[in-house]
Image: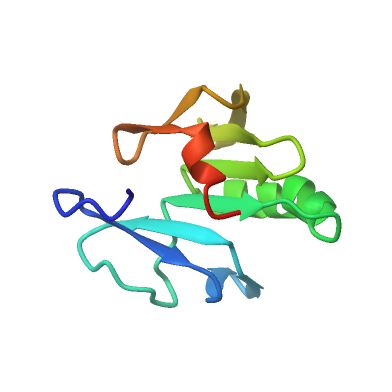
Length: 130
């Protein structure tokens, strides 16, 4: 559903690398889904995604909830979504004044918005293929 032809955004699904460079440090992450909203629509070294989705698993949950959250916040990724197959929920974070603001957890039969796309999605649709 994210591949709407009217949208200026493109979703990219893992595996792929996102290189986050600041000063002399470089971090390479592999988000589960990244949405790029810009003119180039390419995965380039300095092309920071607008939106990132991470699917939580027992082995990645701590890193996704803390380390990646802080990293994505520092690099100005506008929206961050944590998808929990265990709870069938989507936690939404939005960048406000340089810091992530926790919006809420969305569960079955609820809709959440991806502001970058100006569109709402059903939580149940997220779990169709998981």
